[in-house]
Image (cartoon, rainbow, N blue to C red; front, side, top):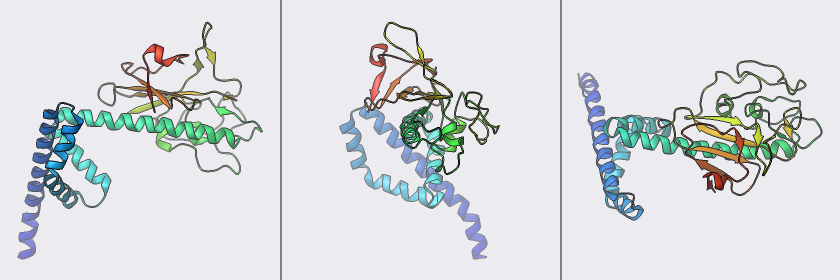
Length: 270
């Protein structure tokens, strides 16, 4: 009888805790809005309501368990109910951070690909054919994939369809494995730029032959659904500084890496 009673009460207890978590989230969002972007005031809110936040975290762990991913999913679910606009902004900010981090990862992968002669052609080149091959390329003795499968599947212009295995047309001696179904990675697509601008001249192709370039590459990350998944477009080149550029392009990827991003309204991301 006691076990049956516990089973009947448990769902109510969970719902009560979820309601408490939702109320706390709504309250904190209202307090944040009242701060009107003043970081000092927002920090004061966190200090002042630390006991309330700690209690909310305790309830989240009790409802969702110890897995951080499940805890995050619960917070996202409840925030979307109690503060949908704040939920949208939080999602966009998270996706944009992810996209900028993935461009950094691609930059690192390109540097390692070039230094290690990952394609085995005896030359130090960047791979400029696409993004997905940095995951899909298989050569004897090669290390683990250079970028994640999620990033590969988010390639908006793969040199070989993501669901196919074989050699890309520009590099018939290479072998690429399947990456799976095309889909954005946390709200963003990635694309290897085909050209870069030069002062007083026509755009220059990155591909110097067989999908490689000995000195340059360019990549762009843009939101899959502008305004819902993200607002900012990011671009990255082989340059060390600035590490990245960002701009609201209303969700459109760039066609060519600008010769002077700052002059065209891009802001540096360091």
